[in-house]
Structure formats: C-alpha cells, structure tokens
Amino acid sequence: MTFDRLGVPARLVAALADHGVVTPFPIQAATLPDSLAGRDVLGRGQTGSGKTYAFVLPALARLAADPAPPRPGRPRALILVPTRELAEQIATAMAPLARAMSLRAMTVYGGVGPQPQIAGLRAGVDVLIACPGRLADHIAAGHARLDAVSVTVLDEADHMADLGFLPAVTRLLDQTPRDGQRLLFSATLDGGVNVLVRRFLHDPVTHSVDPPSSSVTTMAHHVLHVAPATRLAVLVDLASAPGRTLVFTRTKRGATRLTRQLVAEGVPAVELHGNLGQSARTRNLLAFARGSAATLVATDVAARGIHVDDVALVVHADPPTEHKAYLHRSGRTARAGASGTVITLMTDEQVGDVRDITRKAGITATITRVGPGHPLLAELAPGKRTFVAPPATAPAARPARGRRTAETTPRPAKAVRTRGRPAASATQQPVAVKTGGAAAFSAGTRAGRRRGR
Image (cartoon, rainbow, N blue to C red; front, top):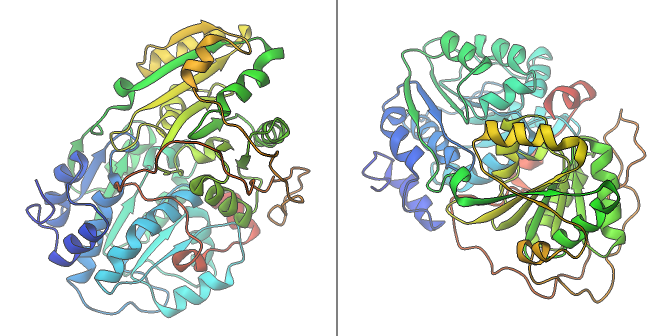
C-alpha cells in the first residue's frame, strides 16, 4: 500500500517522500480512505502507531481543495491537543507538508506571552494547533473565532479527558460548525472519550489498529525490587549506559531533585515538567534530542508529548498511579518498529501497586531484587559511558511568571558521551523540537499556563 493509492494528493505524497516517508503505517492505511472522503473518523492506536499523519494529511488535503485564503482570527482547521510538547510535535511534522500545499499553520498554548499568537491569528491561519486553555483565552478576548473551521481534530483525546479538559473541549467544539468534519484519535476509547464521540461525531467510521510492533509484545519489561537507600545508585547505573534514557518521576519537585542528583554523579541529565518556563522546556528537550544530555527526567507531562527517536531505555523511577500512564510512559521507547527496554523501580511498599498496574496493562514483567552493581544492571544498560569531566550546570532557569519554585534547570553538558547508539534512520516520528516557525507564535498568559500546559 502506498499513500497515492490511498488517495493522498500528489503534492503531499511528494513532500512525504522528500522526508523518507513512503509506506503508510496501519492506522494511516486504515483511516485515510474514509477521512479523505470527508467522513468523521474515530481512530484508536497505541502511542507510536503513526496517528499524526493519519489526521494531518486529510486536514491539509481538505483545505487545499478550497483555495480560499484564511480570514483574520478565523482558522479553517483546528487540532486540539493536551500538551505544549505534543502541539510542537504536530507542528514539526506538518510544516513541510503545509508548505507544499501553500498553507499556513501555527501553534497556540500557554507558557509564554500572548502577543505573537495574537499577531499570528490576525494575519490569518489555515491550521491552528492549540491547547484548549489558551485557545479559550484568545476566543474570550475576541482574537479568534471557530465558525470557519471545516475540519476539527482531537488528538490524544483520552489524555485530555484524564487531565480534566473535557469541559473546555466541549465548549470549543460547540463553537465549530455542526456540518464540519471531525476526526478523533486516541489510545483508548472509553470513559470521557465516548461522551465526545456521542455528542460531536456524526456516523463515525471506527478504526482500531495497533502499531506495527505492539508496545506490549516487543518491549522488554523489568521490575527491579530495590531498597530506598540504594534507589539512586541503581538509577545512576541505568542512566550511565549509551543511548537516550527517559526517567519518569511522579512529581515536579522529584524530577528536579533527581536531575540534580544524576548530574552530581556525572550523568548529563535535564528535566522536563510543568514548573519550567517554556524556554527551559524547549532548551532541555532540544538537548535530549541532540544527545548533549543523554538522560531526560520528566513527569507525566512528557508521556504523551515526547517523540524522540532512539530512546533506548524508559525507567519508571516512581511507578505510575495507573496502568494507562504506564503504557503511555513506556511508549516513548520501541517506536516505529524499534526495540526498547522498560524498567520499573519498586520498593517493598510498592509491591502491590506495581503488580496491579502491570496486570491491568497486560504485560508480564521480570521481577528481580537488585542493588548497585547487580549483574542484571549491566545486561539492561550495557557499556557504561566514560566522561572526561562532569557536566557543567547553569544558573537556575526562570520559571514561568506567576509560579513560585526553588527548582533549577541544569544546562546540559557540552561534552557528549564517548560512545552511544547509532543515529536513527528516517522514520515517521520527527524530533519533537521546534525553535522557530510555528513556535514563534507560542506564548502565554497566567490563566493560559494553568489550563494549557
């Protein structure tokens, strides 16, 4: 199957080929015939299954078929997402395709000043990629209207429900034309997602497709039973291996504390969480993507928004609170057919919770009691790096205005690891980093930061 046989316009097919994308993923092959035909589509696919192109391509094709220029403050297509990082990931994937069709896209989310966004909206935009809170602020201020939207996309709909965005999403969808096309993509289709489906989708076609390599069956899952006193030493052993390592903590303060501890032990690490200003989040994610910081310590804000190729290891330093979070966190590795390892650290008090989470997630994990220097750590994270010098740190990053925090952001080390994994080949998962283009319109108010992070 090829994109042109699915009905994708020739200019989009050529733009995809220019970026090494020639074969559709299963979720794309399943949904594109219906979405390109104008049907409402309900798509389910696990993280890493290629959902982005499944809605970007039909949205751009629909707009290109109607050459009318956008009017000030009235976007022609709307893509709603739960996090800033996911908005930028979509903008990065869409940028070359939009240029090929002479269409303009921009992002709207909280975290920085609103004026560039306001200017972008006034100039007119074809595709608006937005977090619900900040978009609602612009509408309330009269800078945007949704009455010209001909296609609306909800990406990661279940995550928006989990974050409590359903009321805001409902109010926004109520402002879009009732006869417009609506595409909803999600990893799960239960709970609050069903509410949106019943209210806003008209006779939708449902497609449920797992990624080419199911995260449950192709990842290696391990649970390491550790003593609280040795937890940090075990984490240092794991994070000192070649390749990118993504470490999840439960709290923002815990992410900052662990990042500092890893840096002190000679591991180049940066943090990502909601207490950081947008510039710090972008800088740290860029350092992780480029490899100057091989370890990223993140809260669940990153579970859906990080799309970086070649993440070799995901470590749940703090076990997640429920099984869906486990799957979404773990899905940052083994993307686009690659392999990966997922490790959960578990103390005596967490045994029951971890067993319940893994059971509900449908995975069978190998449980091993370990301490620093255990042979299994060398197997899970082989080839420890050697550093010429400990990584340097920068002064504390300024948090977003209106937030009080004592946390700092280490600047990633300038020295890179002496050996690591080979560079990833071209895939359908572009690096989720954008320092210009659509990001130039990214900004925020205090209220937008609270609702659009």
